[in-house]
Image 1 (spheres, rainbow, N blue to C red):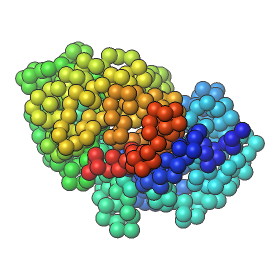
Image 2: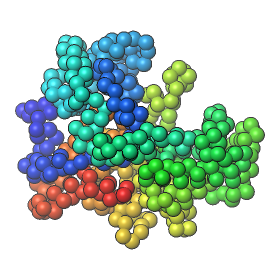
Image 3: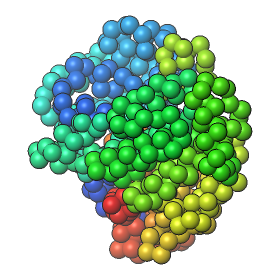
Image 4: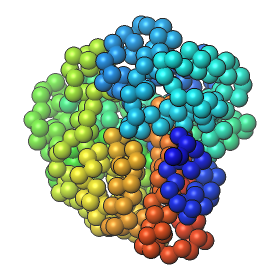
Length: 464
């Protein structure tokens, strides 16, 4: 029987263990997450484990609700200790869920704690971790440094002034790169009630009056230029479905004007406007040589009652099943036809769509850019052992796994960098399994280069 989270955790062969020795020392290029650069800049110590571990983590909130925990112990006004205690009550029920592994990997990696978190050990672990959090080696910046992180791509609204990115860039004492990522939800989802308020904020930061579609495009170009100057190298779009409709600029202008004047839009009009704006944004990204990321397939905020209480991103989202192949192909092709298709990473939330995205990557290419269109890592509800293995196998079956840009955390927690180690173990074990089964040659030099590239080098080159 193997030790829980032992040195050979998830590594079932000698080949896998040897490959992992090469992979684990690679730096981390975390190109998509939701960390707050202000938190890293200020570098204030966390008072306790709830602040660093539970605040803003809707993965954990969702698990606690599934365990029957009352909302006041999750997002409510309970004390931090009571919330931690409720999490400790939940953890023993998580066996089989990646949160069980991540919880204990984070305790072991950052705090040297190998005890299993249970209601019985909760107070002891709480006190030990809280004591360590007061030490300078446990500040936000130190979590980044100790994780060997070279690059972090945050997720940022175009109306952000990116002041903390600038401060971090100019701080010679902090060596990791914290780069913004352009996330223009406010412009794209014009059907939302916040659309007009967002336009006013866009006017304020861009210096451009926005009362027409042309003026919106001018303002968005100004923000793209600003983000680029601030080190941005990627955009990100969260799309519940990928429907594309070719539309003229005149039609798009009429739709914008209709919404700007306070009138409701049909579903077809919304799709037409979003298709037009996505196309124009894609052209801007290509000009800047940015990477365009498309996260497709989440049904968000399903619980209306809790949405009104807690707002978005609070753990009430799930996997959608809308069709995406035709719309995605048409959108990418429309950009490619005008030589304006940027490097693109495609993420699907429904594992049913793995083959769709893996085959889509082979439809568009550019000489000199291996893997220009990427099948992104297993995302959200798929970033567990089975989901990661399936994504890797499907990419290997239908594409070129060697050029894969690898893992990201997609997290709001500074402790989540252990997910890169989780991924690397899964990757090395899978390749080791192929070698042991005679499906790949036992050429360790070649395989070691492969895992080093997928772990770090490919992403560094891709986002350069």
